[in-house]
Image (cartoon, rainbow, N blue to C red):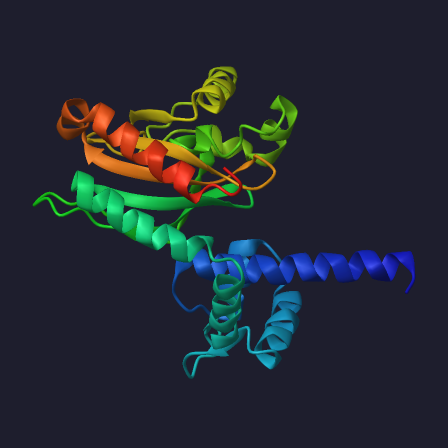
Length: 252
């Protein structure tokens, strides 16, 4: 295959993944023209790629208008991943333990490219409950886990990974990137990070790392609690998460 053809095919593969990621983000079926508009891509290109994804079961038509959504093959691929990597199964048990001991909402979180996502969650048993959309992609700097999951990267790698717009906070102000990187370095040393949530005004977020065999933070275990409960039980929550993180870490 010639070099130009190789580059063209690579761009096509990238765009196909963009379609899958877009549908995951919007969590509803859309017509090809809507997808093309959202991605800023030629409609003809999107139609061609959607046809290929439909042929392979990665997408399914959902209505008479030709709207499409993620296909069942995506689900089966996820099952295969879960069967091969048993960390998520172990994490489910550990989250049950965290929530049972703290009564707070616990989460198992990971990176998804240049975004953060909650992979698993156990809701707290308090009357006041906090929920997050499992699988929703969030700006990394907005999260407590975002101080731990990037600890193995250089300053330049962190800046390259995170889209510039993700440093804009929900209130419209721009985050101090140097201060953010300094928090990453400290969290990497402390093996823990907590702060008042950037996304809302009434919760406090705690996170502890889960390390892979190379010593890289591959995931985090987290607690999201009302601020008052967080102040009263700070050390309890920190200890629970660090113990859980060590339990899940590979080779520790």
